[in-house]
Length: 336
Image 1: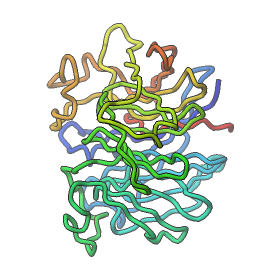
Image 2: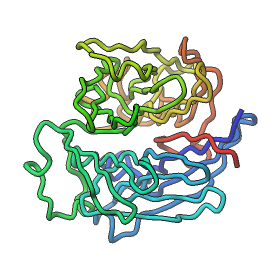
Image 3: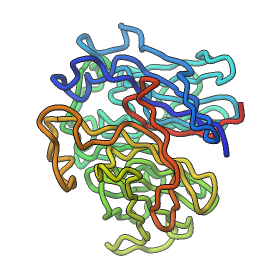
Image 4: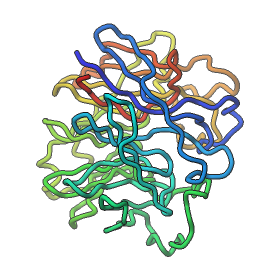
């Protein structure tokens, strides 16, 4: 199989009484050997205080991009680049507009794209961390809703978000982004029809050989051929979605489905984060049995699972809570 780097965060003690943007106290990367099923804590990180909201800022790695031995990762308010062998930061950027970052990926040799979810926008920045292009992906233009002079790194949250962009991907040089609330992916670099995603709120939009793979937070996996993105589209979802099934006979609550890595056209690793009581119940109305008001009974742990892409059958599962990972946002295959 392979070694995987799984990224996310450790839940803060007493997080049940805190808001989602205060839930994690340490960003973490876990190294997983898929042959043995063993996982080990590989490195940890906390954003400097002056770049964070003043009270209980969430310390968590969200989605990124692996290129050779360099792993690009975002925290809530920073872009970091890591040397995976040495487990150290080799580059770091922040910007006053950064709030609730969800994804980063390099664009060529000297630019990168970031999903700046808190301001419902996608930013293009150069190697000096300067914004060279910006796209608002909300219903209202960005700077009609927000003040460009404010340092949004110090703002705990800007929720409710209008569209909540999650993941940036590229198809034939066009830049696309998934949007959670409208349940779609839109092209921001060229005028093209939106791609409807009717299975649920989309998170990942991962490029791989067979096309673009999508997750929805309610546990569906879809693959879309690249040709679809350049064709005219109607309001129908062009993808065939596979519903993912639990490996656990004692629980059909999969958890928040985020993090995706294809290692063949037919099998993929998918990340799940344990469901916990939340004030944002409207976002998880798809649960068949709802939340328990107290405790963890009936919920599955934070983990990664290997799936047959065609059937949704769970082939293998690796628990990550033993190494202190309580939320998964990204999965990357790495040849250590």
